[in-house]
Length: 348
Image 1: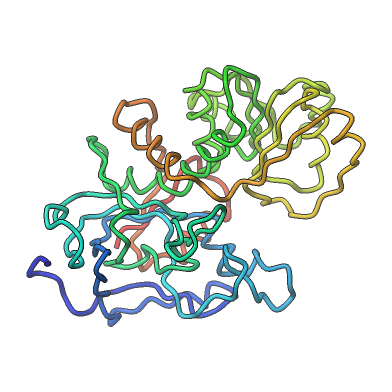
Image 2: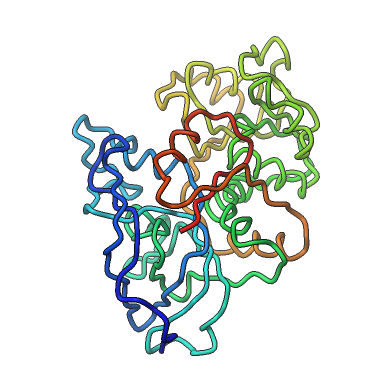
């Protein structure tokens, strides 16, 4: 079942291979996908810009020099693919096994989805990596992975949520954060700023690290205190101070994060924008009884938690700027400059 106004073709951005911005091709004659029995067709209203799309394009996830295995799953990507992990839109068509009442629903989509062929943890299928995503006018998604949200937010505001906030909620879910002391680096980005809001819900005391130009904005979001990106954390904060460290940066100063953790502390990582290779003194790990979490897989309750927070007014959207979809290259250039706080969002 579908609405009569669905066209046969659409405009979309194709990623044609690993490489620079030249690998992103804007086209206006892509076939509109047809939903399978358990799928819905979504007319995309807005799509967020994230590190993951850039990392996938450049082959950053691959540990080999030829970029093989440059997907979230570690397998080679089948090009061309439509990226876009953040989806907000309206269901306009459904497969034969989906209730017709879903047509017309405004939905957001779970970015890291359950693999129906392998439901054991931590297997998943990710939009824009294993599945076509939202950098298009239309995208088809399994109905079970689409969720309505009852709120007054705009489509652009809702599109700022799925990837960044589910990553942040996944991190805090894994470490089981309570009313504790938490350190968050990369705090001005989409995931970092989301983590601040979500840690505040849990009544944590938050120290956030960001560039000096963004400190005031980060305090407004909810950080109790801030430190500059260039700070020596051990000198400024002291050793053994934090119950939890959330790491989105890694890089050359990584060992400082381990030193500021209390004995018995928990470290969780979901990014490495300053460099993925670090050196660990294993004596620190075991003598301080630390626990390390690598966080990608997310159980479905993580996404349902986000929807609850939105509907109860516990979090606020942070949108820095919007762009037409055809200006995706400019949006990604601006994203890499890291001069914004919150999310950049594309509108088809």
